[in-house]
Image (cartoon, rainbow over all chains, first blue to last red):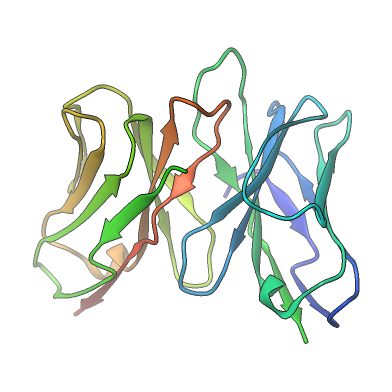
Length: 115
Length: 113
């Protein structure tokens, strides 16, 4: 098992509500990436944070936002939830730096259901 | 934008048969990674390929990176029931920074005992 933890494990929200998902990265990792994985599909990159700054963003609307804290933990916030936001949200940490590509350590994910 | 395609989408094999999944990118990649996701689980890193034409082996698994760095394959010899899961390739393009990965849709492998 990786040292990446996510909370909550499962969440049910109503359309139009807001949600905050949390991730604690593996010790020593300063980069956190968030992915959305719909059922039966591959993970889709939402954004990445490196040393508390956004470091790349995928094709997701502004209502998807994030934060990274000094201890490198991270939050994903989604406003105005839509039914299509129902998915597994994965957080992945890596020891990025200097342009080297490292493997990503995924957390167990948060299963979000929007009704 | 960069797209990564994987075939087949599903593969059913008898235990002991071989299995191969193929990955193709619309653009040249700087590197490619492979992940395995068990049912109900999260992606777990298997390997990273960086060099053109690179071949790496992990026991019964053989990974290849194409000469043009636009395609890759994963071959499993003599599958076992423990190989069940979805295998994803994930590439990083030259224009992106950090470890941003573009995942393929995955190949779901089932192994009949």
